[in-house]
Length: 468
Image 1 (cartoon, rainbow, N blue to C red):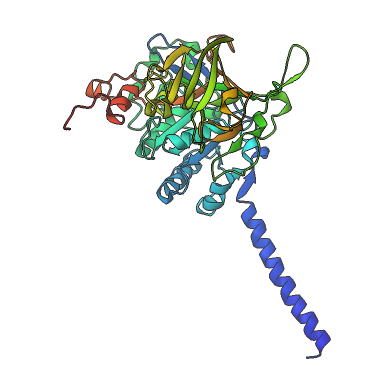
Image 2 (image 1 turned 180 degrees about the vertical axis):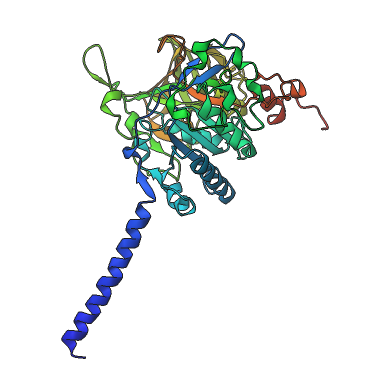
């Protein structure tokens, strides 16, 4: 064959091969779509109950966009995430399943329908519900996706990690758990109920007519999945910390916080959408607060000398802390780093902040509980002699702090006063497991219990006897 014809034939083969590769690539890309193409997030309401200290989840319409967050580097948990996703795609065809980019690449070929992903900065405006599969660290990772936002979607947590003190549900309950969340507030008629977990709706026929007629048309196709008009998911709102880091000139430098997780790109915080930005009374743009569900930590890091930090409470000088470090934690975080440092255990419904020293020089420096609305300022003392201390927020973001810098912390207020009409907002709304019928008083724990007592005894071995 002449050289010219040989070249054209070779080029034809290469182009055909390239076309086939491009076609295959295009087909695969259809399996992973952009989150920004999804409808905007649905905001649920959280209603108070006369019979429970927990809140009731009420959807105005069925949730559509679900973020599934499995534990990283755990093949068994990834397999469980695929099982959960297949169930949702099969039984709830109107749902859109969302994953972090790294997870989406791993599992999209194992699912029958397309899934969605994007940079996590686009998640807050689209996510209706978050489902986590892992331990407490996985819940923190999911909550950190909304760390710049005042509102967090409901979090349904399956305990599949090392400790799982915050995880409420066992994975083998995932069908019932999701059904409860999805149908909460649906008010589907009792006559439509089927299945083994629907007996708790007995008596719902006695509701007033207007209570049973408030059926959103989008729930009509979901036959047999309601728990009844009188049943809804229980919600525990875990308040967070609002943290601001300021340089020597009083300028907020929150954007210098860097991620610590290997699953994230090492880049500053994503920009806040225009609708989320706030202005001061003088017309200046306010830097967004960074929210933490567990704690803020300042510690000496690799330095051989103790950290010296001036502590102010509501603009009053409290003490000079000389220690390895100091923590400001939420009640939820009281059973985390603060507990290891000797801090008190606090119930998550207590509205308080906890200041805990880490290996203090003074033996009389004890943990201190303060009201939730207290403004705490931690200022790096000049006595540190130029050494940089390390600031960590929930273990997810870190930065350095030098002499004169301030870390300002206050509790995030949650309650009906934010949105009115009895609906609560703020905090991290966690879906609490309720025992199925016939198990209402198992082991002395009532149905209304939020699992905290069980976790305290079963996982943390509170006041555990010697020799057992």
